[in-house]
Image: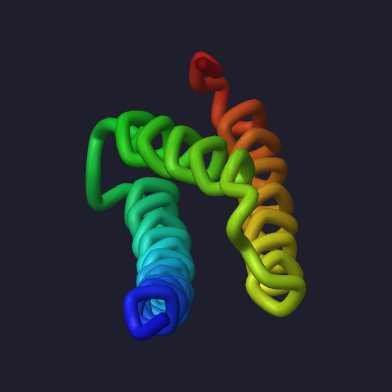
Length: 106
């Protein structure tokens, strides 16, 4: 009987640890979006020669991985969707600015 209780307790601990890990991933995603926005702002102000397409591709891949995660709670899913909509609006802004500047889109 004690074994069953221990297994259940371990399952609860792993769920809590998994939720904490997902929260940390969401926070990193928010930070990465903020950093990418800063990188594009620096590019559009003329301080760098190349737009940060590699960073954008990595961030899009990270978003796709997190979108497939079935372990998100409703609150985490809401926060994730908020971040994705923010990234999407930035991406459209960057696309329009690159088009106005005459740069090649990837």
